Length: 492
Image (cartoon, rainbow, N blue to C red):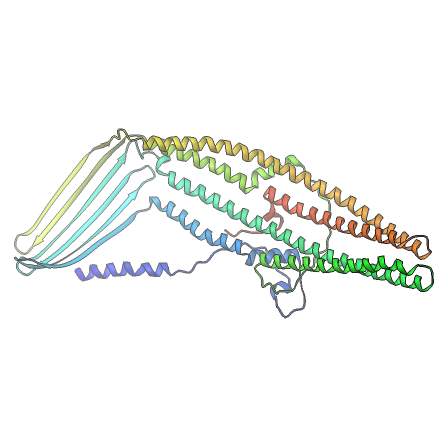
């Protein structure tokens, strides 16, 4: 019998390392649309990899370190919920030992095993069922065996009684799980927004690089025109210095634009967790359409979907449960108790003997002069009132953010329209002035001044358009609709 008990203990202990060696398998956010061929087969040997915004988001969901870390955290968070929900499942504890001892009278070997099962019900009832077996073999006294079972039932009547109090840890864990899911959604949405803005930055720097190249080309063309006019005797030779200085200035601007483009490329590659030598190029066109957003409808949508606001709502429920538990802890511990036990003993000298007992009664524990329970209730009440204040602040902050986001997207579109008109007028103005220069009715200074105006107008139009596109992404994040807009499944 002792050998069988030891084998059982070894089997139980051997399962621990097996469970500990299980590999972590986090989930992953996905999009149903498949990536492009360029994205699915990234190669450093390629001279150029065209990357669309959709491809960038796909790569971000797959490789971004912040998203991967959030999903790894979810493994522990889900297990925490599993442990909390296991609160009302039966628990089994097995104790056992084996001793070999001797004294002045005899030498004996003793082994015992004690399995005990405990159960907590959703109403606070605590049940315990145990069984003990002891096997003693002595050289002189012979073989002795005894075993017995016992059961205990404790039903709280005040402290710890009631479904609301007994299930409070499970309710808090489930609310905490909702908070964790919303935090995951917020993390993914914020990361996607940063990727969108990073992609737009790369797109902007690429366009600025092209603007710098075009400006340098126009400056060199003007230099050729000046040289031709000087050769024809229609311009003084010293006036070409202005154009040569403009060419040098545009070469400097081209180098700066190229540097900014490379910095934006590296920043996007880091967000996508790709090799920094990957030769990606933003392939989307720089264009956008006007959208009309109703502020009241947007606010309703944000109140239903915005993770930060919903987390504050859940925090209010958690504070209320904590107050209920704190108030219950101040009550007296009055419980009904009952139980029974039976013991049977057998040995070679006296034969077999059996005994039993049952009991029922009331146990009372009255704390006197203990302010710690009062302290917990005060903290819980303050927590409820503080959370009400925070919820009011969160509600007003959400309204402010939505109003600002809706207004901002309208302002950005109007600014883009004005900048687009200004660019068209600058182009016409420069073209007219170049024609006047060829017939001697203008000067280099005037043409160069209009060239500067055109570059400013082009960069202003580009900046206004990129700002409008970014405002769309930020509006999605404010409303909590980023994942829906990009058809992203959290798979959580």
